[in-house]
Image (cartoon, rainbow over all chains, first blue to last red; front, side):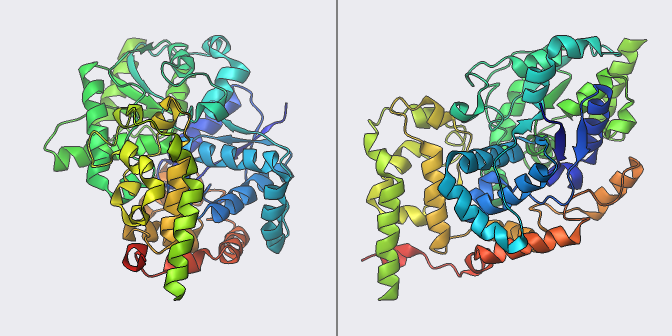
Length: 297
Length: 174
């Protein structure tokens, strides 16, 4: 198996750098061969750019893929959107010689050529398939005995014909990665529902997008959990900033901590919250960090 | 005359990408699975069922209410690739000049920075607090990479596409 290159995308390095750092710390601790990918751009985002111009979408995605091909490494994504774009583009290139040639004709202008000889991975399916929950459990230093609402997000698992992760109706792989750290994954209504951000809806119809988020948050609150664990910085932002926006505009009072799985894993592997960018100055997250620390004592 | 040709072409293209919508049996599994439809006017069944029949779809705001969650496509008993079809119709709509103003802004970000969401000053200081480099290992740091991205965007005619004035094809239907 090839080593990995880390594809950062936009939201992780440019809004939630803690997730970037948590990913690097966790993978180093798990002894997974990971290198920086230098000079990548936006994946480009599937909901918007694939909607606008498929050729451009495929071309920019292919440039990103080439960067990892040149390192002879599979590419690791930590965002469902990046995973969707890069995995789908990579599949299109591998599947059709004509698509590949057409794309390479444009890439030639920057002296690059896509070969289609690497794989695109998502951190959740990578950890599940290549390491497994049992092995991850062996690395746990701090058992996180808390109640968790797992949010898979849409593009990690759908379209299922392309993802090889089973049915999207009641998946368990992500829950198993969470319970491996000592936490309990709580069932809640509409667990597999979308966060409301995708498809360009958050950017163009913010209120409607937040109405979807509010519905999901209301079910999560009913389930009385300590935090939401996600696998995607876009869902992360929709739940994190979204709660503030909902509280402000809909006169609600949501206060649920939100963590990307890499940050949660980082806590379990013994890294302090400050190192993982779990902003301890944010009230909702401070409460969570205090609870975990109290459980440890 | 030119507009008329464009309009004909748009109809043909919609018919092509939406051919599978003819398989629809109106069962409604798609719209009842749609998280957006609960909160917006999006009726994905109606939208897709009528996709190939009317060029007005290109200016229908419902096109942009889909979060691309794929529930409808996953559950469609007729195996219609609903979301893929919707994305293709969106692209035709954009080519006909119906890019939403907020989405145009996102495109401008990509053209300028190579990122849909470029780094903010606040995030730069967050990175420093975490002991990270101010600029991530992306085109933000490697300017020659950004030039490559711009070259490709230009080669694909993306600037021209984004700059296109709104000219709803519904106005020049025949």
